[in-house]
Length: 149
Image (tube, rainbow, N blue to C red; front, side):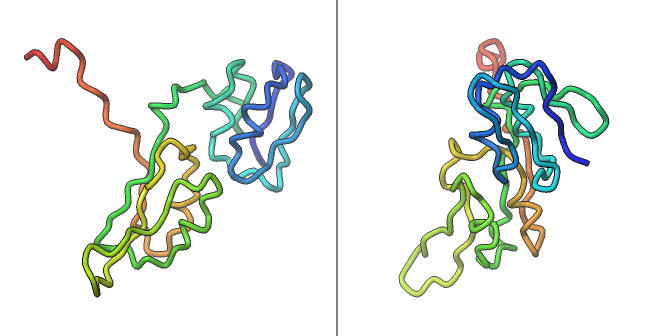
């Protein structure tokens, strides 16, 4: 099974532009479709859809989410072996290897170097052979009332 785009789709192309596995196709202004063999059910298409036209495998509509609420990878630096599998799997190009901190430093690690490019798909976490990447929602910013207290 894979996600499905309903007839409510207006063909804005937002989902197809952000799909990390290029599973969505369609012309501007026309109903888009999801290739079920390519879909990894990451939910990116639903988070960006302004018409809530994406259904998950259970038939539930995925709600649009503000980009600031999309999950981001959190990498345990001490456990990372710098194998670069997550970096290679990140089609938006949000991950990279850190630079050595000093001459001769061998402890480099994967890092979220371009957070604005991250679509929160979680492919990096699924790809990590050491399971040191978790997907987490960004911490909520304190409210004005909470900051004054």
